[in-house]
Length: 166
Ligand code: ZN
Image 1 (cartoon, protein in one colour):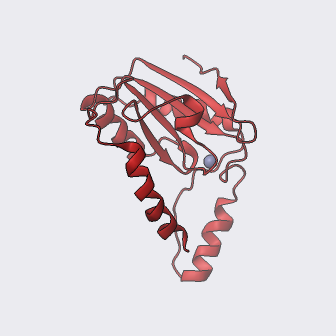
Image 2 (cartoon, rainbow, N blue to C red):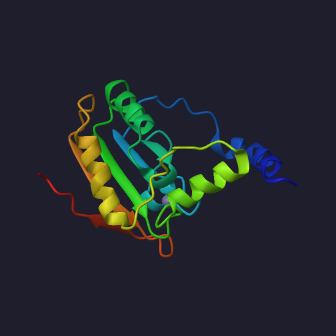
């Protein structure tokens, strides 16, 4: 069976375990997690989160794109979150990615030149700091705290990154 059909079938059992719960839209822990789309990151398991407790905003790399900022503005101003946990991770697909090589292969295959920035980086901890700085500079955001971490996908452990406060 294809993986989407497996997922749909799984949901039939999940509904039985889930039951009917009318949780509020506002996350109970007032927390937003910004992280990578990586398939080895189980945020609920790794952070002890349950349904209704936190927003989890994901993209390739967990970087502060315009759309992440859009989600955080809504998260904070409409749904009451006030803390941001940034989680980047080891062995990310973006670590050391040759962006120009990717753009060239897209151009060769499609005949259309892309100027897309993919967000490659060399040091995950440094990338967490860059992301935190970008979020702190966004005037529409009003969080009281940002903390940054690098998650080890091989052990499941979280390592805090010291964020510069200049
Ligand atoms: Zn990643």
